Length: 100
Image (cartoon, rainbow, N blue to C red; front, side):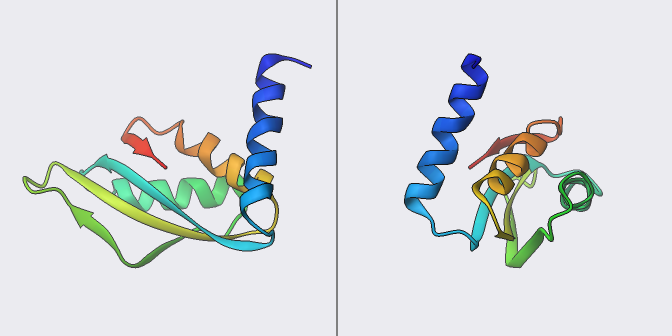
């Protein structure tokens, strides 16, 4: 087992200890506020994972100067692996600065 496999197993175990799957799970994403960025993130994650990720009602807030935006994204996660897959997908977007 590689270090990456061990890390993923540890994260999966932590998620399963703290959540009862299936469950609703929320992600907070900080990204650049450029035209189409929010839509491309949501659509990209949906396409790559096959999960019904959605922007929460009132789930978008621009920074004071408008350069960045925070997104609250919701999904019905059937397995802990669904959550890890979304995090992995979010890592691939250049416009995403932080996610938690």
